[in-house]
Image (tube, rainbow, N blue to C red; front, side, top):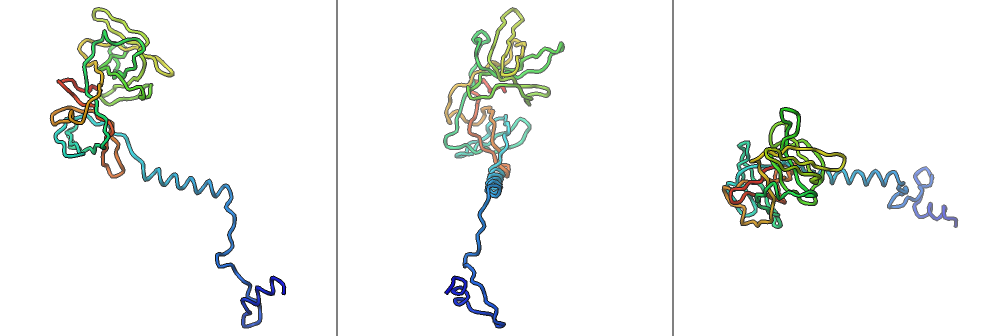
Length: 228
């Protein structure tokens, strides 16, 4: 008996005698081509990305309470915020440095804004972690300010005339550094430094529901505040 005859015999015939052809219980499977695979993968990645999407939010303010892994902060705009701290949160405390201590090659961040003659004038200078991306970006410390993350190329020290020339990938920036502005280095701290009344700066991660998490906190100590 042929394979077709065996299939007809095993299934039978319809009322009018026409054979009912056997069908696989799993149906016919068409091979998935590369386009389908790529499309499916992209859809999965997009779905995961949307689900995990987070926005970075700069937070400046005063600690009002610590309750377990939740830190309450009165932000500088008056909002009351709650920030979740992971178990491995990194804490750094602010420490003053002198302009004379800044050396060529040091990696610093400088918040500045244009002076009357258009020259950039520093509002604060702070040392950066090596993992910080160099470059320039708009900053929100004050209206019209920008942040330059760069290595110190040259330094000028004079009476009433202090300048830094900053070099980053793609450009340089000269800034005047007035007397009296904050010059700060962050040094390792502990969770014990996070106490009510201290001032913090953090770049928190905001989830889709607005919940804030901060993997790293910079906090004031002995009256020295994170200036950025």
